[in-house]
Length: 108
Image 1: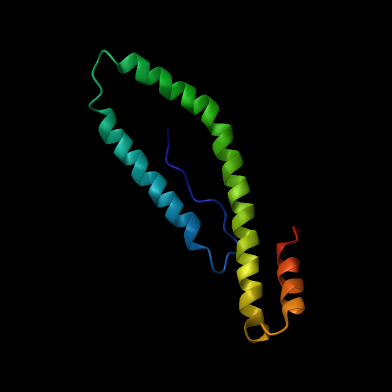
Image 2: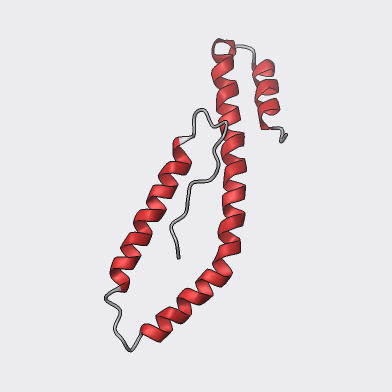
């Protein structure tokens, strides 16, 4: 299992730190796993290797789908935050605020 690079975050103004933080946490977890993996007894080695193979085979598509979905969610939330920031002093006009937030969430 290799470390993962952060997903593309082009255009994330407010939430650009999230993918970087998730990537750092993933790398730290993997390093911890590698450290613990050294202490697996020889008797359990084939079972652990088998489990790693199965996890890699079935986990890769799930990780890819989750990364793609996570990127879309971050872009949507970032757009909403940007719209709310833009409206700042116009909070007394709820309909206009609703329109701007809805436009920010519309997929392009």
